[in-house]
Image (tube, rainbow, N blue to C red; front, side):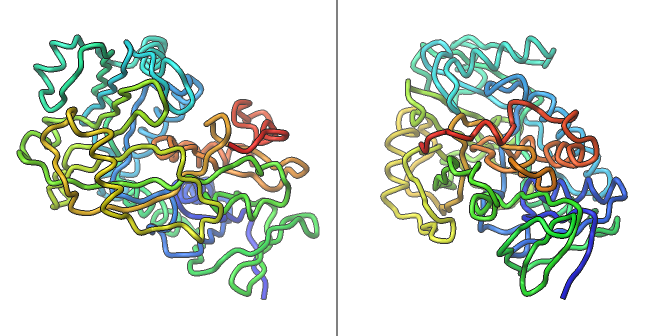
Length: 396
């Protein structure tokens, strides 16, 4: 069997659902294929909430993406009636006066302040006294740099994916679920994608398969990508009103020198009904060789370790045990930047992957950018995300 479209999107998570929606919106014939039924919990785009922040400490190249994503989510809210973006504010706390490292960037909070200033993003740098008065949920040590951004907050990832897929289908895109892609290859002046017993043909492919991208890429350029198992926990707070949206912002706390000395969390979403505070760290040591072999069981000892290393003495209102926990995957590049662009050796396959743990807030605009790359070619490329930079990189 065969099927034909202008563009095939492989993977319909954060970036893939956004790309499919933007293709359909542009009137481009498109087919989206996913191994499961998105939104699902098998990859990186689940867990109810994802932090969004407008000033980006990972680099100012990201700021236009997140600002555009906010615009797209507001447009989607108008189209669908769904609540997707919660601007409850985001608080970023950095040890050593903001010099602590995060996502491979030293001075992360200092970089965030600089990005806010450069782009005119509303923000405050709070004193320790002001932070303690406004946000008494946090027990600061006294040497931190504290950044508050009222336009930040969080998005609902499953809702964002579902909204974009719903509108993509309405605009004419075809969505194929429950079909595992087994091969992508150039063929007859285009690209062939084999999935679920069908061969799909198109002029271009957008490869947005997350942790499964390296196994599907037809070159070795993506070899340096690594997979990291991450664990999420939901705690029942002692005083729920202290952790409600409107009282508590989303937050990131870098409390030591090393990348592992950090955690993040969310206020209680007022329309999910469970009354729980979600927190997580970003562990760099839990490597996973094969996404299909991901250990999805979260053990009690992992929650105890998270509480001991991060919450104890910092957020006294959250005590063991958590009500529930879950595991997800990060796909990481050695430099912690995105990988977006044509694979080396072909202009017909555009890879959109390796969000390196900070991608969902940019995803709506990343999907739009991937479509621009197909329409406009190299003129639309963002050099920092070029997949060819990975050639010769070492595994981390």
